[in-house]
Every structure is written in C-alpha cells, then in structure tokens.
Image (cartoon, rainbow, N blue to C red; front, side, top):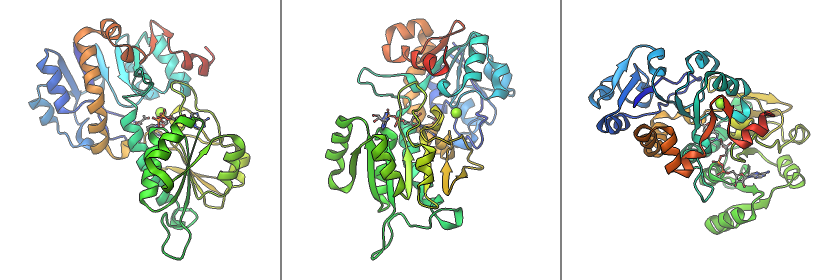
Length: 359
Ligand SMILES: NC(=O)C1=CN([C@@H]2O[C@H](COP(=O)(O)OP(=O)(O)OC[C@H]3O[C@@H](n4cnc5c(N)ncnc54)[C@H](O)[C@@H]3O)[C@@H](O)[C@H]2O)C=CC1
Ligand SMILES: CC(=O)C(=O)O
Ligand SMILES: [Mg+2]
C-alpha cells in the first residue's frame, strides 16, 4: 500500500504518526512510505533517518495526503480539509466534539478510523492509553505550574513544606489519565482524591494506592463539595466516542477558591467542565470567575520525544494490519480495530458519535 505521513499542524504539536522504525517495518513488507520533509524533526527524527529506513521524503503536504493510507496524530484542522479524499485516514478524530470535521470527512468519502475508539474486549482503549498516561502525568505538572501566583494561581506549592498545608487535588474520572494524574500529584506530595462513578474502579485504585489517596463516588453533590475546597481539579472522564458529560457546573466553579486551577483533560471530547473551551500550548489558560482554566486539547504534543515513541509503540501493529490487508479485511480479522471506524461511505458509523452530533 502507498502510505503517507503529513506533518502535524496544531499549535505546538511536535508529534509525528510514524517513526523511522515504523517506516522501516512498512517498507520491509513491500509498502511505499512518503513522509513530509521535516515532519519528524520536533520528535527527534531527521529526514535522513526516514530515508535510511526506506521512506521517500516529499516536499508538499498534498503529496503526503494523496496516498492510500494516511497516518496522522491529531484530527485534520480546517486548513487540511482540502486534502481529504476517499482514502483511509488513521488518526485521533474526537468527532463528538467536531461537527465540521465530521461533515468534511463524510463529504470526501474518507474511511476515517479513530485511534480513540479502537477498543479491546476488556473495554480498554489501546491507542488512547499511552496519550492518556502522558496527559495525566502532564496535568499534575501543568496544575503545579499554574498554581504559582506568578501564573495567576493560588500560590500554593503541591507538597507544601513541613508545618504548612499541602495542595488539595481532586481528580474526576479515575481511568488511565486520572490514575496517572493522581500518581504524579501524589509524588509531588499533594493530598489526592479520585472520584469516579465506577465502584469497581475505585476499589482497584484503593487496592493499588491504599491510604495514600482518597476515593469518592462521583455525583453532583459530592462534586460540589470537593470543588469548593480544591486547589487543583483535574477532569479526566470518558464515555468512549461520546461527548464528555459537563460534570462541574459554572455555579460550582463560582464557589472555587480564588486562583484554583481546573485542568480539563477531557476537552478533546468537548470538556467535562461547563465553561471549558479549547486552548493551545501557546496560550493555555483563561480566567473563569476566579479560577484558572487549562484546556489544551493536545497536551502530549508538548513532549513529542516521549509521545511519538509511546504512540507509535501501540499504533504500529494496527497500521501494519491495515497496510497489509486493506481496511475491510483488516477490520474483519480484528474486532478491536473494526471499532475504530467512525466514518465510511459518506456516513458516520460510530453510534456515540452519531448521538453526540444529533445525526
Ligand atoms: N487533552 C489531551 O491532550 C488528552 C486528552 N485525553 C482525554 O482524556 C480523557 C480520559 O481518557 P482515559 O483516561 O483514557 O479514559 P478511561 O476510559 O481510562 O477513563 C475514564 C474514566 O471516567 C470515568 N467516568 C465516566 N463517567 C464519569 C462520571 N460521570 N463521573 C466520574 N467518572 C466518570 C470512567 O468510569 C473511567 O474510569 C478522554 O477524553 C481522552 O480523550 C487523552 C489524552 C490526551
Ligand atoms: C488523545 C489526544 O487527544 C492527544 O493525544 O492529543
Ligand atoms: Mg482536538
């Protein structure tokens, strides 16, 4: 198959969808790989490394996009809609939060496969998992940074010092991102509470972290109580494919401590705080009442050396299947991969996306 790898175009997005090792694996199996010049540089990969791996370096985005299988990291931005065609696009899509992109994919007849809805029988999301690990860890780091008074925050140190209060960190949604957020905040010395609607998941977290963290069943009453006394709130809920539920209301944010920081990791699915709107690494926060809101939709893009390696570790086996067999046969042979299909033949085929967009 002819495989294309364009550069990422989102603000400060340094990842690339294929490493030289991945290009080598594809070429070895008889596929042709075209990588846009310079696309790997921010992740630490030069054009020469791709050439040595057997890839062809192309000079225009058009050429990288005009292949049978296009590999990307983030969803196409409006500037890229013109490149969409009836080929296979394999990338994060987050369509529940993006009707214009959904319509562009339908109009182009793209076979659009979303990393974030590939799902194993145990319900885990193997291609979202590594980026949730990274975004979770980063959320605690970013929270600590924005809690500094010099950044508009409450001026509290995560772990305090002996004789002072520690920061009170509340994590809403104790899945992959939430667990990594909690573990990092714990490592920084904060007081950590994880809230989730899944009691089995809270039991699991309790057995892993014991008395070092608090677990709480999530409901609007408990959320209101926790938000009012938190220094840092991290939102990391997910209903796969669907728009994120707005769990923290504007009224709750009004009661927050002045300078409290709210990190909405779930912003790529529309956000789980009322009042969240997507921000960029260049301008990551805004003020809402007296709170600092951090809503960057591509958090791992800031650590591309780690994130590209972590992402391609998990995507490559699936990429090889699609390139070797074509979409239909690959999806027939792998039920987890088949669940990645979001748009095909001009129609949305993922049920939660359909519901979220009212289609
Ligand atoms: N902003 C960014 O750069 C990134 C964002 N993400 C996003 O982070 C979010 C979380 O992803 P994962 O941790 O992988 O998901 P996950 O599926 O591992 O965890 C989600 C958790 O939310 C819980 N949950 C669902 N509804 C809830 C509710 N009403 N109240 C409390 N908890 C609830 C679930 O029980 C589950 O434990 C997703 O939206 C994902 O797309 C992931 C990576 C990067
Ligand atoms: C999952 C996602 O949105 C990201 O890695 O940017
Ligand atoms: Mg997005």
